[in-house]
Image (tube, rainbow, N blue to C red):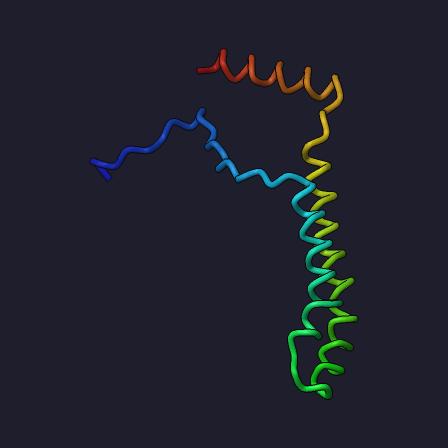
Length: 102
């Protein structure tokens, strides 16, 4: 334990920055997934009996996959929305306090 160094306690770990994906990309993916499962996937099969089964499955999977991407789009749009003035003021005050402690 004599040679171990511990980080200072007053420093906060910085969260990793995640890559930002815009909301419209998720919306585009929802449209593409819906079209793929609903229209393209059944057309890719040669056997008519299998095409019918895949078509039925695609009819069920298309809206589910589209809804999942629409939820992601709503989440991305929510994170893109500007914060209200009070929360921005609080963030600025918090930054100033953090700088004073360093």
